[in-house]
Length: 286
Image (cartoon, rainbow, N blue to C red; front, side, top):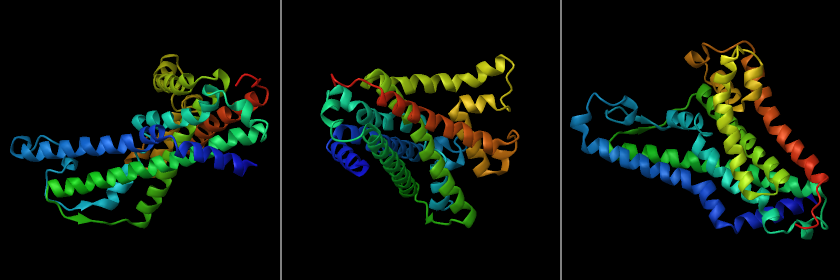
């Protein structure tokens, strides 16, 4: 029966072109357009900007390594723009039955946990597709850079870089999933699409400033409390562990355990809370 729920949710999402566009295509397409415009502007004004811009912008003749570009792209998968726009599709899936008052038509045909988990599985698939779309957009951006600045293309990926790419991709995907789980809990508890959209954003902004607030209260950022309360910081700890080198130079003790526990707890707690709440919810009017 869970398979039926997944199939039904997948079909419904596939017909929602608006949600798919904003969740999958908007960020990579706009990012590519902005990058292309930036490269063209820098090329046109190359003489004026010489020595004033960082080397990575492209104002040099060194070959462009697509392998290194993939690793750099994976490190930034879960940026605020991706989190915000993937949330649009996730909120549509999570709160759609409340908005269209269709829960009473589906709960008679399947168990409630299956119905909710079917939505979760589809959204997890959406996050995977979003990370792939961002990766393709970044590859296209590097190709445009190579054309505009007439730089040769190379591709080198060592074993260590391949491992970094895999772990960073998994981390970025996990961070996106963690973020949209807040939308699931908000959708189930409030029965509102707007709440599913805005509650995770508000919580995310609050968690961004929380470490500074805790530090002002005497709570050390190297302890356990801060990463357990801020999944963004937990993800940053894990990223530093993966990248190593200078990024891992100032890591607190047990950074790996703190990062994993912080990210996993903020993923599972909203999911379990949503399932428990949904089991006891009166859906006679939806």
